[in-house]
Length: 353
Image (cartoon, rainbow, N blue to C red):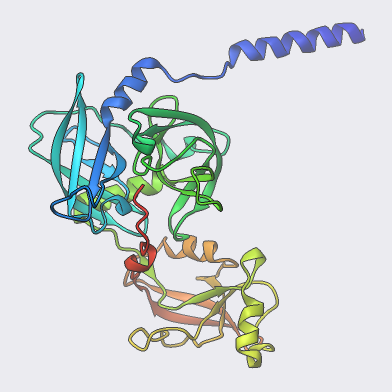
């Protein structure tokens, strides 16, 4: 009897193996992606010379007009931006202009000047089809080597890079200098992310790859096509995490020991007293209040804070749940402001890659 059970289990395993083979990306899909991924050569000078070598990035067409989605850091403060399409068997050079910017998401939208034909383009994958463990492919021009394809999986689909508003995917596919702005695709050739940066402790080409998640990139693209920019809401306060590994409580107490008895031990977000005079703390809130909710939705971390705020519009009023002097309180009628992106601070280093 045990032998029959073992034989049946073995047969079932073999059947599952053949019914659900590992998917490989089709050659035709690769060719379409290849025609949809462009090479960007940028320079901070209007008249580049050998003393100021060009930096290289990738980008992708997102409609038949040839509009290009790439990274903001690829074009930020660049005086010369040349774009190269692959036409049949050779590169064709075009000039471009930046028509949309989203520095917080590290995304930019480019219009190709003089492009008079329809071009292939990539479509976005549905957000429910983007999950941890999904097999993906990174396509771009790393280290100046054109048409490089690397394979991996989504190691985590809920990371963030420069700000909790911007959901990113972590991938183990190779991402190097030159991949920035290129697509991360699934086996259907659909965009699951936009390659953005590589986190490395050794300043080498080995580390953790991050890309802006497709649903975030698609929302950003829609705004850039319509308005040329992307604005997001803000509460108007600096907050300090008190929970988990990101807790800064000990550092704060060293600087301000008098508040030790007023804040909880391990949850919520502390309202900092570091607001600029031109941007005072909203009326009703005070420095060292602990934010624990928005409109009665519990908030414990800065990521949860961002996830909840992004649901509302600039100019909308919300109620903030807080702890003050060990008492639970609600502060209502707080109007959300426009989030001011510290662009120069985010991009103070030349990270074009």
